[in-house]
Amino acid sequence: MKVAFPRRRGRLFCEEVDLARLADREGTPVFVYSRRHLLERLAELKRSWTGRDPLICYSVKANSNLAVIKTLLEAGAGLDVVSGGELKRGLKAGARADRIVFAGVGKTRDEITAGLKAGVLYFTVESLPELEAIDAAAAGMGKRAAVAFRVNPHVDPRTHRFITTGTVENKFGLDLEQAREAFRRCARLGYVEPVGLQMHIGSQITAPGPFEKALKKLLALYRELRGSGFKLAYLDLGGGMGISYDGRPVPSARDYSRRLAPLLKDCPARLVLEPGRWLVGGAGILLTRVTYLKKQPIKNFVIVDAAMNDLIRPALYDAFHRIEPVAVRRRTKIRADVVGPVCESGDFLGKDRVLPEPRPGDLLAVRDAGAYGFTMSSNYNSRPRPSEVMVAGKRYRVVRKRESVADLWRGETIPDFSRAK
Ligand SMILES: *Cc1c(COP(=O)(O)O)cnc(C)c1O
Image (tube, rainbow, N blue to C red; front, side, top):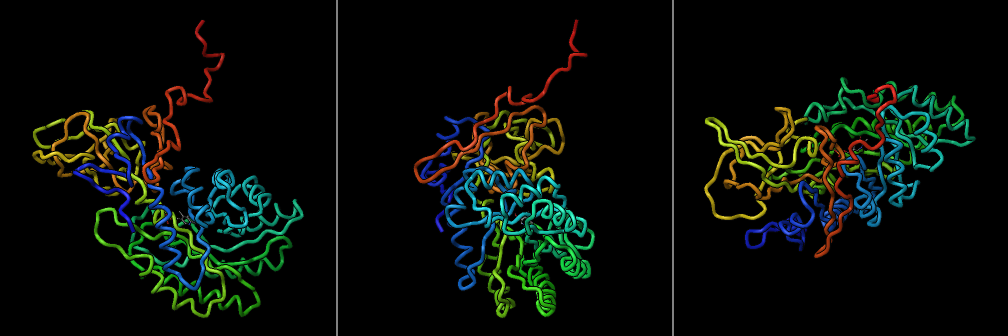
């Protein structure tokens, strides 16, 4: 695999594009994505499951830029969507509906109808009331809805509690007993067709153990249901494979498949995977420019033009992202917090970092910002959201332009009863 962000003569590149020049032209903050990285990751994941030909449904919520979706679609991916908006995005990017799986705990009637109209491969169902709602919507349209049940295997993936989804305390999925009940209910309902089982135990998981434990439980249920006559065509292992944010090694896709494939040896179902972060995280960086260096008696702050509204992971999960100068000049080092201008103490991109003492105007790169970066961004503090750029070799394109200040109040009105006389 080629390095997506190589350093040449001290300068950071994305593929063949000099990032300092890109930032000069396009401004900062800006998210930059390597197309090649996306393609290489998808290919690596496919290769690691040779013989199984899994349907890889890219989880759109990690990075929903149309250009990112399109790149992965062209390389053969399907999609995992969790809202009507994501469904429309996927279709807009050119996805075939029969390669889209539709998940989410709170699908509304409108979203269900949209999924049925489009003809998604299946809905991942997370509760009995949702099953009834899907049945009713399908009945209304005279269609049958394919459903896969999300099973909560009650396995703790030992990741951050906000991104744990497969324990007893989480809102996601059905426990084993509810799942059995769901299948029984399908037999009574006229318009739902159970086609599979799904699990998704969390995000940023960095060990195969929890997957293995969860899969064993899922497979036991799978066999039991097959025994009862349910022909389950799909077994969906969800997403959650973690990436390295600090440079320390994490298991490879092959490490996971080596542990999981033997368990699946006799399972005839088509394997479905829903990776998000693993495909796109390392493909992106956030470029930001230093506004001030603020030296204080006990702490230094590098104040930059990107903030928690652009990349909320540090504030929300205490997540670590490497932060590097874009151009390395020999300079004394400094220990500092890298912070944005937003009026919150939680507004930091990195704490206690040792980096070459930056000067105002210098560029910093926040690494591994391709997943849950732009998609979780907001306009907090009335900050227009950054632009997004995709690089392919020597070329790059702005794939989402920077928001303007006027975009900030698009859709707002001052009511007539407030107008000054
Ligand atoms: C978020 C999500 C994923 C992707 O998770 P990653 O950790 O980014 O791989 C997959 N499936 C479902 C149902 C999800 O909610």
